[in-house]
Length: 196
Image (cartoon, rainbow, N blue to C red; front, top):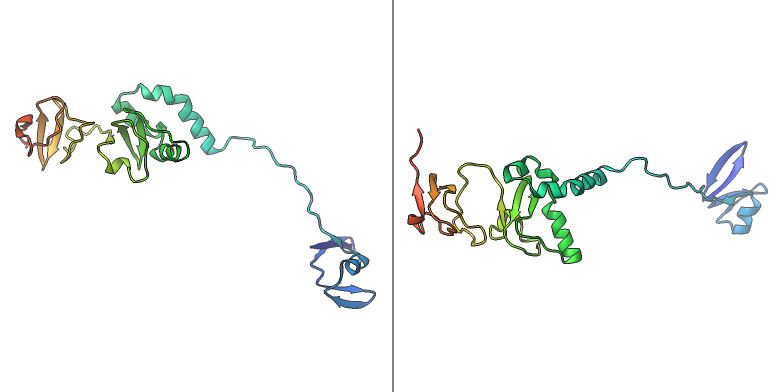
């Protein structure tokens, strides 16, 4: 791109065709372009502008880091109220892929609008999402009668007094470290009368 001042205005041109000495010239040489008064356009250097405020992501990251020690101490019920403050599963997956970092047992992670607790230490993998790997993650919930999984992982057993729903019926677990559903080990569960 070339430029020159004509009638007090800066004009731009590609200089594929120029007029030199009253003659139009196509594909002029650099010398002809210069002789016609055109100069290579050099855009002015604009100094980088400093950010006056941190961006949204930086603020959120700082708040999460600041509160991280506090959120570790919360009960599951209180943790659910501030679930967005916990690290995301996606961020832990990124750390695993880039640095080989894993997650610790009992660590809480936000995934797909839900909060999950890590059942056992492991290095996250893309196909081990919290919603599809009950051996690795347990959804944190304050539902009084959560669903009893068909296959209860040994890393997240049910304990004496835990309430659950199996095939539409409410049960209370009668033993610690129970990894069997009510169909597999009926003696470990007490069927509760349905409330009308």
